[in-house]
Amino acid sequence: MQRPPRLLLTLLGDYWWRRTEPLPSAALVALLAEFGVSDSAARAALSRLTRNKLLVTSKSGRRTVVRLSERAARVLDDGGNQIFSFGRTSRPWDGMWSLVAFSIPEQNRAARDLLRKQLRWLGFAPLYDGLWVAPRDRALEVINQLAGLGITTATAFRASTVPGVSPEGLPQHAWDLDNLRVRYDGFIANTQRLRDRTLAGRVSPVAALVARTRVMDEWRGFPELDPDLPDELLPDAWPRATARELFTTTYDLLGPLAAHRVRQIIARYSPDLAVHATHHSSELQPDASADAEPAGVV
Image 1: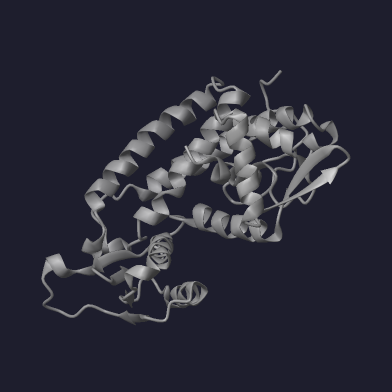
Image 2: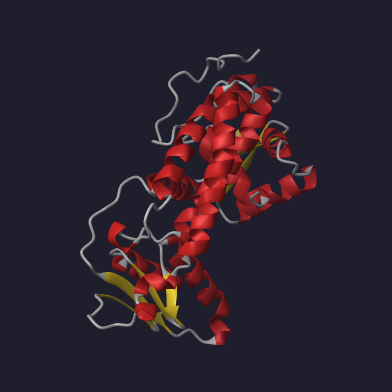
């Protein structure tokens, strides 16, 4: 499971999406407790997110209240679009690759590590030392990342392969597709079981909140591992589409139960605010019946 700061942002993005009302900090501590996070670790997460300008903390009487910053709202929107659009369609490919070549000295190691992390998020992988490749047009996004990090010793360009390149030197070999298939297969098996239990009514609101967050967290890892290679470059029977269908179905099935649990937790500290907690679907559409209890919940 995610670290407490990221977990809290995930939960706010899932159940307090695009809301501007501040929540009692005690409610957020209680929400994290559902995932086994101690009070001290939860409050440390709140402090860290506030320092990083992702949360805004203020006082309401004697209570500390917290809301998402505008920056956090943008981060959640961008991340949500990336997570939920991944694998939706197979886009045509023009045969061109995006490449980034960089040389960053050891004394700027922090920027180098952050660049590598952001490149993976954009679907890049290292073809050779200092040369990263992605199968789609990511040039503008890379240029923006380089500018944001203040890196000037880098070049971004697009290119195609030429006939006669040895199979081992082809760009698609920058990714370990065999291990990625194993990971997809494990995700499919686990998510099928969760979907079936949910359809059978064997998942409580308490369990649904944890399970929905876990399945989304697992799915979120795939865009960093799977470069969205064009169909013509993929092995036969590639499991991405099956995994995505199971993810979206299960995520949406668990939504009403999980949101019900979130409302229960917030209601301990602010019944008036609790009614606003809801969930969105995998299509990023908010639930229109937030105040209704899911079927089978008493």
